[in-house]
Amino acid sequence: MKFVDEFRDAELGRALAGELLAAADPERHYKLMEICGGHTHTIYKYGIDGLLPENVEFVHGPGCPVCVIPMGRVDDGIAIARREGVIFTCFGDMMRVPGSEGTLLEAKAEGADVRMVYSPLDALRIARANPEREVVFFAIGFETTAPSTALTLKRARAEGVENFSCVCSHVTIVPPLRALLDSPELDLDGFIGPGHVATVIGARPFEFIPAEYGRPVAISGFEPLDVLQSALLLLRQLGEGRAEVENQYTRVVPDEGNAAALRVMEEVFEPREQFEWRGLGTIPHSALRIADEYAELDAERRWPAPARQVADPEACQCGEVLRGTIKPWECRVFGSACTPEHAIGACMVSPEGACAAYYSYGRLARQPEPA
Image (cartoon, rainbow, N blue to C red):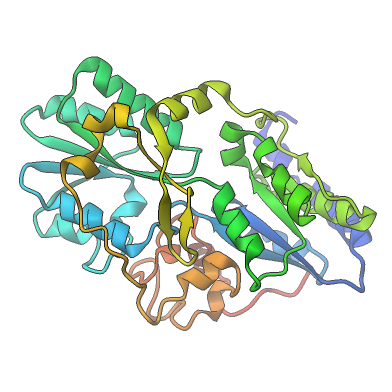
């Protein structure tokens, strides 16, 4: 397979649906968690859930990098953005994520210089063009995006750009998965592994899931046939009594990961002792901070922020959606008070959020009947 259309072939999709039906034990109910928000959008954009046997259920995990950022962390960013002389830069979806005192987009409307960028290198270019201003980049994301931030910080130092710094909110994937597996709320049968994260860290870091918890994992690509095939791999493992990590996304993901990316991350970052996750609470060693060697590029050291823990609005159930304990349409305010235009929770803002996927593709009340 070389072209995108081949990964969306309807005939092959129907064939895989038949194989899934044959592999599923009709006396059993299966819960498969797709960790990454990209997979959630693929599932509902292409109606993959309608091709599953009715006893196979997808459960959404905490793999949306914008959604897991807590409100207090957004407040910290807004506090820095409102400082005199600061140009605050971030990805577009972060501009609309609510904090306790509004959003970065609202701070911009009130006079703060907040700018959308497509990469940290865009922020560095802004710093070069505005040497009299302090330019701050709000870095978010899992291990997928952390190497680009690390390389940008190295370039800023090499070029002597002293007015550039970063608020580092990069998170890591393994600790929240452990937290979910240790939770009594969920009884999961297997995991569709995050293909983008695995392109950096490889498939091996997920081996603890079958080794310690007896659950199979299939690292998956993001096209419809990728997700269907990954679900089939999981059902076959479960039917055969196996639990291991299988790499469906071999065209992109190496078992050992990207050695160069891992090296630059290790040089520039170090683990935080603890980090608060929306919906999951505080998880030890689950995020990255800028290492002491690069301290001059750490915006949090230049301007200490309040760092308050702020609870989500009472009506918002993003935390339960991120833990996979409810579907988005079960949230009290989904599609009514909370929409993409007027989001109460981060899951409705991000292009990778489960609530945004359900809303965008018409899943406003319940799952459709299987095809």
